[in-house]
Length: 262
Ligand SMILES: NC(=O)c1ccc[n+]([C@@H]2O[C@H](COP(=O)([O-])OP(=O)(O)OC[C@H]3O[C@@H](n4cnc5c(N)ncnc54)[C@H](OP(=O)(O)O)[C@@H]3O)[C@@H](O)[C@H]2O)c1
Image 1 (cartoon, helix red, strand yellow):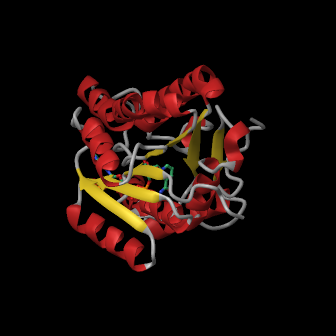
Image 2 (spheres, protein in one colour; image 1 turned 90 degrees about the horizontal axis):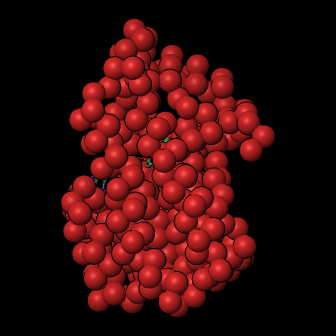
């Protein structure tokens, strides 16, 4: 299926590895011109080279999303290289583990600076142009934790819920302008983030990452982790021309993990 995004300008953040990189690749494969961003310049260079080698169009900006000016720098660079941003995929790293009862205020502030404020700034930078042009796609990468909070991941559970509330509210405000706003919640996906979390949790629980992984897989009806390309394929559809009537939704890509009906 042609997703109708050939020639569109897309910004994908958190795109140096894992799910963000897979989404950037998927959009480039559909013919979008993709601006990738993250902090690690070496990884971004390799990612852009690989996309170009495959016939795609891509560029990058190495920047920290914690810096308030990053959003406006990304907007300006995209316009200079490709044109106004028509597709925003807001993705970042996950916060450290921790319990709601014991995390200090500074940890909450830092997590908000990672998970919430960058998305807000990126959106504020790109939304006016999208509304004026009558077409836009905004997709935030969240987590299955917005449906079922995950033990010892209080920062993720709370702040991604805040982002989801923002997305739902915004979706209704801008729907008539041709702009959709959705969130994508990955389930357990084979990336460095998940390796790191399993290692930390195994240490905390006095078990091995391998045993912990086996326990986790037993909870996933599909019986395996997702490959990032599977998550990216769903993301590509959510920002497609065909998904014009799909807005305000939280789509879980989780192999059947979450149990709730909605
Ligand atoms: N993998 C899973 O099983 C899973 C499950 C549920 C939710 N999620 C969430 O989905 C998102 C993507 O997951 P992932 O597994 O692909 O994570 P990942 O492998 O840790 O990748 C995170 C990306 O975000 C970038 N990043 C982190 N902090 C940044 C900052 N301050 N400024 C700019 N870029 C930053 C990283 O690049 P640099 O280090 O180069 O900046 C990297 O490209 C995360 O929020 C994660 O928590 C993942």
